Image (tube, rainbow, N blue to C red; front, side, top):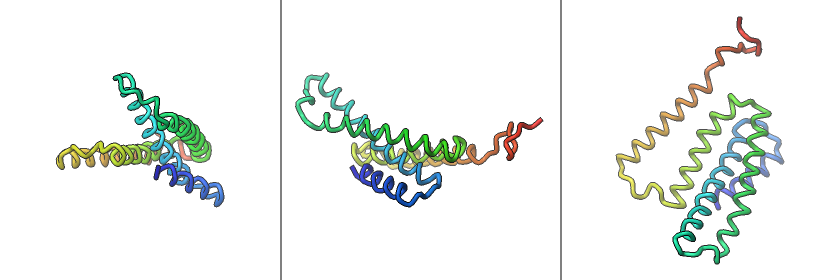
Length: 156
């Protein structure tokens, strides 16, 4: 829910101030993506419990999560498309990948306690792996495409 509130305020700030940086779009898109991931996880949990004989469809929460799921999914795609149209895929996709993954893992760890049962050693391995992935994505994003010069013309 915190992600959703932050996303709404960031969206309004982005619309009102007309700031145009890649991080503005990506932050909103990633926060919405984090809410989408958490909503999908909750809906699938409700479905699994229902299939196991504990009917969850008699409660209002699964029905309340479906509109949140669809709205955040649509807004996420909309902001991602705006960012790609404004800044290009080579700048947007790597940044989006790292930030979206960060929000999804953080949200899942907070809401579902995914990291509660892990040892300190596994937490360090997880953090190191995530850091290595982030650095790798950064290095890939910073490299110039070998087939295209800065002015966009193909090299001969």
